[in-house]
Image (spheres, rainbow, N blue to C red):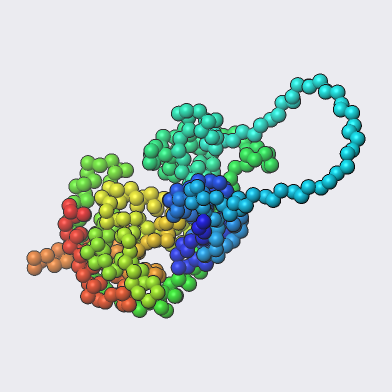
Length: 420
């Protein structure tokens, strides 16, 4: 038997409320399944499980708050019996009884026709596969199912674009609202799920301040910056997008993200964590992309294995991540394992940004606004599209020489966009 505990969804998290269980005792789960939803200052987070087995016990009820590390549920391996079931109940002690006179048996009553009983009906997307019939039920992700209930959309009518044709959150957002039956009276078991609360901007600001104060207090930062000419990258990007539909076009941000990920492959000393007084390399390059939320919040969930994705795949992943971050559909793994943070201010940002490291990471890479400025090319001053690239890194894990190698690699990679 093993314990499933409340995960730490960032250095600024101390506890969270369990708002929804997607499993029950006896449910068979596999690694990566979303089994619960918790509410933190970052909003609703879907919590995944990282072991396969059978849920034997739910330890924290819906609506209860649990600290990080608290046991939420217990899991048994397949074929292993739960301790609650291992000991059969003891037989009741025999009690001697005296014979009692039995009353005469009543004559059997004539059966009357059964009264019609109204059976509660579930929305079409909550029906079981047997009820829906073959070919009528489509796979729906948990986030998509919740959003569909909020918008009044029947996901079984949508063409899914996810894995194996599953209906995703993006499919639901793109669908026009449809009329659905009014919810049944309270107590019938068919009440719609309560919409999840979004993040609390005040609480998020407090949490960010706490984490950044800790970072500045405990981490010996050093800072480096360089300026990169994006003339070649933007020319290549314009040519690439020329023959693509709007949904297939790339944004400059994805070139910066890809270059940072590939540079971290060359300089792995900046990709990982400072844990228990030592540097621990990341098992992959999982870039935490800083996303500004509506309501002045900020979050940096991970794009996993960013160095292994093509530019179009990165663009899809980035759009999906931003959409889910702003609608409350992030998963716990996207918040627990970013190995580095990248922040890009975009076209409406400042010329440069100097970040603060998010512990236990050891670096944050910043890209300022891309703008036309004077630049010397072959001895001539020309107007060129430039971007300021900065690095804040942990002096316990690396030094300025290593940081300089990373910035140099980013510059070199952006001069060869066709190889990204």
